[in-house]
Length: 278
Length: 285
Image (cartoon, rainbow over all chains, first blue to last red; front, top):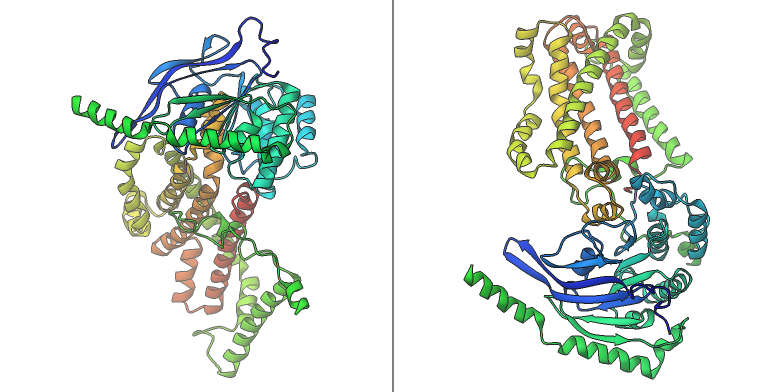
């Protein structure tokens, strides 16, 4: 039904994560954040990764964005390894992450300043209209509500028309109503632009509502759990979230997260064992 | 009841009240740029009224108590002296300004540059920090006699003293600003492909700006202090020298006239940086 397979004729996989493993160096020794995590995302597909806080979701996303390297494994975009920030990848951060000393217009202009490119004024104008921010260009972030700030962040990420959008719990700080609104808006934008989206959240309902597939990540070190295919018709209405079927799905995913063999304990045991060896 | 409620303003939770969000340093821009808030006509009228009451009160009280001019001159005498004897004060103001601006230009630029560079190297910073602290906390005025011994009684020792007093103040505050690292904002810039220099110019510098301006303000006030102090130590010119001259010759109206000039100079420095802060750092309200 959805998935954009018809577009990606050459390779069905836009973004591929292969055996991603990541250790952080910390004062108390190496921290195992991501363990042998693999996933594929089709061209134009909307995939959510859900998991408990601190399970390594952000670590995974930063690796996809090329913001940091992996201890082992690799990420490829269109078959090319991603080792540094890629011009075809747009990133949306937690809590909008606008620069408070810049007006909205100047915030949206930041990627072009950095790349020394001329912004596509028409496209940006269209995006601003699309998210309903006309007339706010001269405002500073603090003058706007959280939802409006996140709308601006979406415009900024799409301004240079990347083919992939990586979203790191973008609506986590918003109230429930604004979150619903933003989810609807995001789906609309996705249906219009058909970007490949990887969306991270710890809100299971949000993940189901938005995505074609939901990947469950275990507690740290992050491991791939079950993958749920979500078959609701597009465009989706908020009303689906109150249906019986939806509840059952939420519960199923929740129990998958809760009852997944705790990666944390196992990881700690492994770490202790490794430290004992070294 | 209803009227009372209507007059209440909307409570703004989460807004910082005044200065101090855990910053090291001597206050932050929220204290400097927003102050106690915008003033209405009546508040300004009240401020003027207080000045009138204080000055007028001093005038009346001093006259009633018949305090002699050589102990405390009445305000009107000071005002007259400021105008009629301006020829004995004005040229010295120019000397003081020359020392202040040259010393400050040298000290502040070195301080700013050092802060920008040193904060990029945490190890070097740790080593240098205690020495900067010594420079900040030791009154540089104490060095003036030595500087005069080495450089004579001209501008040079004073300019050096001003630079030594203002530089570390600018540096320590700016360093606090540069040390603020918001990893999410840096990651944002990196995600657009920013290099180290772009991250510095587009993220670190603006983020440090409020503290830089505070440092520049405090540095300038310390510079003024040191310039006047150095002039009092030796050399026959400058406003500090006027103070010693006028007091030793018991020309009290003239003495106070110089104090008024210094007060205006200090306020001008503050207002200058206040306006710069409003322009460049008002986002941090």
